[in-house]
Length: 282
Image 1 (cartoon, rainbow, N blue to C red):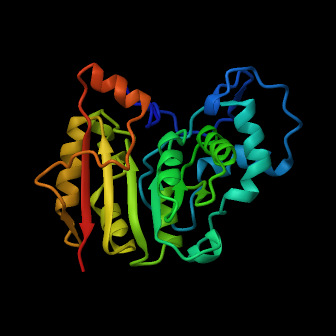
Image 2: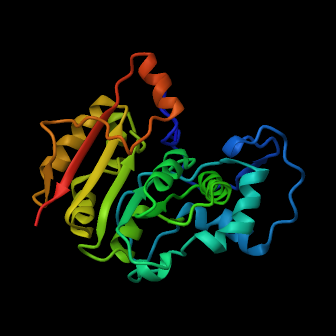
């Protein structure tokens, strides 16, 4: 998910039509520097995922404006192989019914939702640093899902699951009210053109929905490297009656959110990053 300052949000596109991802045979995801061997033939199930599930088809009755667009994407052989081998082990299919986290994770533990995990670098580090929490990552794009699946396998992460679908529909349909310990929304697509601001993820209606899914005492943590989006986030979060700011304005970056290499580079170049942490009130 890229902007001039960050690699966490997708490049904007005016096209909104599905496209088949192209496969890049030079695979450098998750620390691999050598070209991957030719992948085995992809199963019909994975082909179907690449064609449609990755692009989050509408649920019946969906009416919200999407914060992402369907666009041609590149995927490496390693990411494609991870989708083929690991999707069934670590992913949860979207369904319009409530998720049972204890069954999904095989244990009772606080559950944190991460929306739009990009290539999964931050998600991996947080899940490893907080083994007593469950993490549910939601992402729509195949390359990011494949990348995080590889990270789960390589780092032997047990407390992380993936849903590849539109986050609004996942939160609305699958997350029970008052059930989440936290929500992470890091570097969502800023949609910088004013006419596209309606596509920004953090709008009042969605923040209200998220707040209703967070348990009292839980938190929502957002971060962005676009100042005008930070201003909008602060306004929208502050306007939600179920949420209270933990800081006077923007919050210091907490230790549990690691700096990515792209964020470090942006800070070195003088770009700003704004964190916001709000708690759910009773």
